[in-house]
Amino acid sequence: MTTNENKFQEIISHAKEYGFVFPSSEIYDGLSAVYDYGPYGSELKKNIRDYWWKSMTQMHENIVGIDAAIFMHPTTWKASGHVDNFSDPMIDNRDSNKRYRVDHLIEGLADKLKEAGKTKEADDLIAEMDRLLAADDFSALKELIAANNIVCSISGTGNWTDIRQFNLMFSTQLGSVAEEADTIYLRPETAQGIFVNFLNVQKTSRMRIPFGIAQTGKAFRNEIVARQFIFRMREFEQMEMQFFVRPGTEGDWYKYWKEARLQWHLSLGTSPEKYRYHDHVKLAHYAKEACDIEFEFPIGFKEVEGIHSRSDFDLSQHQLYSKKKMQYFDNDVDPATGKPFGNYIPYVVETSIGLDRMFLLILSESYEEETLTKEDGSTDKRVVLHIPAKIAPVKLAILPLVKKDGLPEIAREIMNDCKPHFRCFYEEKDAIGKRYRRQDAIGTPFCVTIDHQTKEDQTVTIRYRDSMQQERVPLSTVRDVVLKNIS
Ligand code: ATP
Image: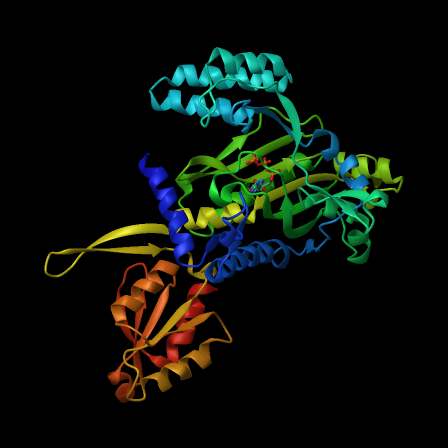
């Protein structure tokens, strides 16, 4: 195991131990690639969601939000292409009955080659795989797997079935009697809820192009290779924004959003060198440009967000299938003709980020196991989450030094003063050092300690998580110190 893989495992254990993420229905041994968020996890997740929502809707006057249902009319998914095309090529091992995504199987070998220093062989293998995937040449892909002696990690054999497409959508029945019921799908992305509501939103909010519609919500994909903690889940949450523009302006808007989204990530203080763009070479037939924002997770550089220039594909498809006009009347004057631009189906630039992946990004970036040298020269360890203060699950811990002498009463007053404004945590048990460590482990940026001096001069000790520095401040300023740092 490499050091980074160790770090990944440490993060997973830490997330569970401190109430961030639990395996779903764990008492029944869990459910593969499905996770629950615990008390601190759900706070952090909500804070990331709110931060995204605010930056999209509150900070952009021309972006409004919606909250569409997870269930949608089944024709939606026919029109969007998901029924026919939302699939991955899969292969099964006959001895273990284990199913693999073909690209992941081949990439696994490429990773091993790279580790062994055979970078050229690895790159050639990936290039050949990409070429065959683009051509949908499944028999040649199977030959590639055989020629490279790729075997199943469980059975150890190369006894493979043919490659088949496997649709990633979950289906279920709507209605009480199964035979009469219609098959419907759990949405595999939130974007279609935005497209089908395009005119409702445009008209009711009187939006004029260019404008955006933002949405956060659950999406479901029957992922086959799902063993990377919350990086790839079967039930996850997306934060998507579709930006509707006049045809011909999409190139500029694509550039704008590509840059703006990276800036959003950096506004959380994340190291710029851990980010990179991956421009797509192989584009969907309707796409004009597409890129991923990738982050260096402990498991390597991986996609966290996609920015896609999608032309008028989605709205045109819904117009075709629903027979309802998806057009916008643009009465701005076209300088070329001196007449209004008139009716058209808008083009779309979309930004799509996984909330759970963003959560994992924050954990990966903020997790640190520090070795501290004490005054006597001995060393100690502390695990700290350097979560940006504005999204930390708890902003302030309020800790009376002892449980008596009127200190808890003063602490409670601070608690009452602060808790309407931000999330606080009160604790009077255990030695103060131990309490600090627990707050470090959940990423609380500030702790205040109330001691006997507080009774005399109305000051408290404020301790900063990252530097562990402590300073004496008037207790009346505590609320503002925290507010200043989280705004
Ligand atoms: P990948 O190539 O990793 O499967 P994708 O290109 O299919 O992702 P999109 O369809 O563009 O992803 O979805 C947008 C975002 O939703 C992704 O950038 C990712 O952050 C998130 N996402 C997609 N699938 C999952 C999943 N199974 N679990 C968690 N997040 C996901």
